[in-house]
Image (cartoon, rainbow, N blue to C red; front, side, top):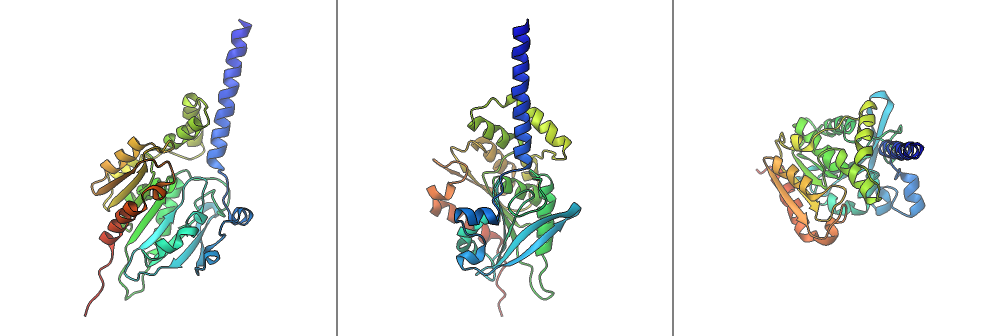
Length: 299
């Protein structure tokens, strides 16, 4: 009897430790901040790659401050591109690829989500508060001059950022298109994938961790439900071998939208899609951007 008790106690300890680690890692992801970039030799800001950028802060309730880089694009009639990074990443993600985004838009805006990069204070939103933050960012940039025609706004996101982009677009008419790279249905999906990649049994810990996160104010949202309410075009890009945001879920998100295009990349995982098929994905991206471009005034 005592052996059974010890075994159950050991299992309880393991599950408790796994839950605690999962919750902590979810709320406090690794920071890829300016200091991190300087330490590893990554470009620390747009100026490091020869691009002038305005930096400003998106102030949110309760003292949350989200830093933003705002870059002028090279296509005057193009859309405003709002780039949203994935979990554990930051706006630094986009800096080495700025040239490609600048030639596709009239303006390129990069933001650090809650608990990421140089945002303050600690505490990731996990796709809940992030949605309201993104809508606030869209409203902030959607301020054309009185005599200017409003440029279209396209959200481009990866993983967490892709999911937040779809959720925000469902509730914000000012978003004219979404490019979602490796989106997922709910927070359970990437949490389960990350634990599985470590060879840990997450079936029990995940449900408890999600319950704890809900108590901490992170309520799960359905990306498929939001995709079904979209009134703008959606491009979903997914990797065939993605273990964080598996292919069936991403396909279901695309199929839920009324105007969508789905690009499955053979051999790709969670973040290397363009390494495998850059020409095909560039064409799909350009098709979506072209569909929302503001017509050039004539006469």
